[in-house]
Image (cartoon, rainbow, N blue to C red):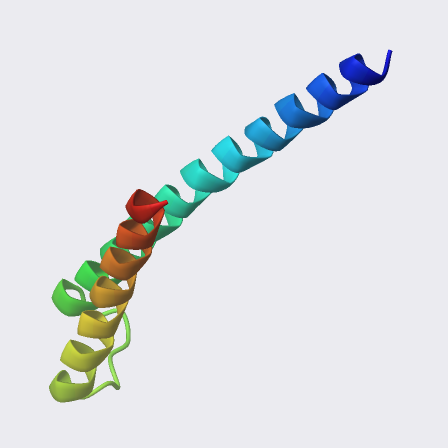
Length: 73
């Protein structure tokens, strides 16, 4: 009886870990896509070019960093 509860708990933890991994990958891709969108599309028209490049670079680097951390686990 106790073993069944432990198995169920382990299975639940594995499912949560798998979900968080996939969610992390999706978010990393989202950040990279936001960086590219800010770079190539005039989403914010009042933003100077230098600031747009900087914000875009930060989004892309953060997305790559998140993806690296997911792969490292």
